[in-house]
Picture (tube, helix red, strand yellow):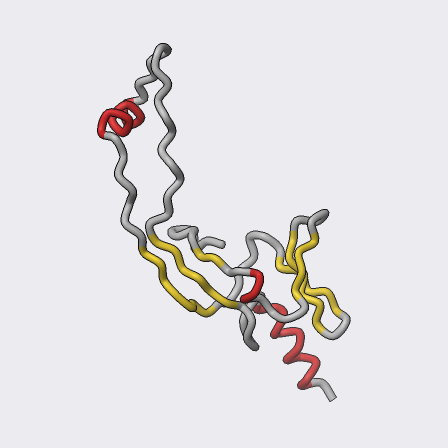
Length: 116
């Protein structure tokens, strides 16, 4: 999940609504709520609550490797190792509470409750 300016918000499966499963064929998470399948489609806006923040120091990188990569130098005789993927700041979040997840999930349920 991302906020356009920040992409490292993680929602572990254990932090999703009960009865949520991943459909591998569709590549989407689905919440089975009282017999209705509610899809958590990629790119949709969701509400979440932050559980924790994780900040990690950057691992050391050899100066020559870093400079070569920054300058785009590629020596055919020497293989320059790729920099490891590193995320210095992450948020762990949950959607396993009423009102969290896709806003339309709750608009639909509120409309059902209010109708005579």
